[in-house]
Length: 93
Image (cartoon, rainbow, N blue to C red; front, side, top):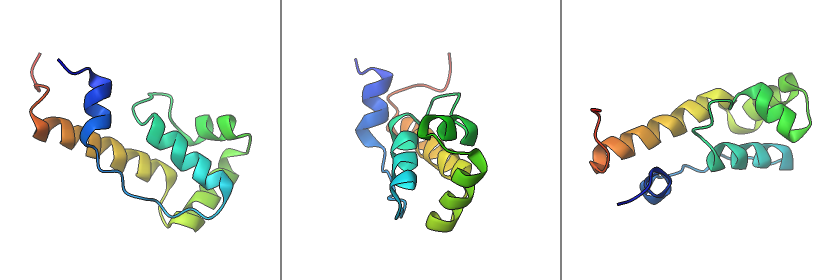
C-alpha cells in the first residue's frame, strides 16, 4: 500500500512558476517541497529565507504575476484533485 507521501509525489503536475531571482526560486522550491505544511505562510517562508515578509510578497508578485499564497492554494488544490481522481484514497473515514 502506498503512503501518503508516495501518492503526493506520484502524480502531481507541478506548474513551473517563472522566477528570476534566487530568493523567489528558493521560495518556490520551499513551497513545492512541502506544500501541506500547515505553517506555510508568507511569514514562515520569509523567516526561512531570511527576509522581510512584505519584501518576499512584493518580489514574488512582481516576478511571477501571482500572490505567494495563491500559488500555495493552487498547489494544494492540485494535490487534492490528484488524490481524489486517483481513487487511491477515499474521501470518507
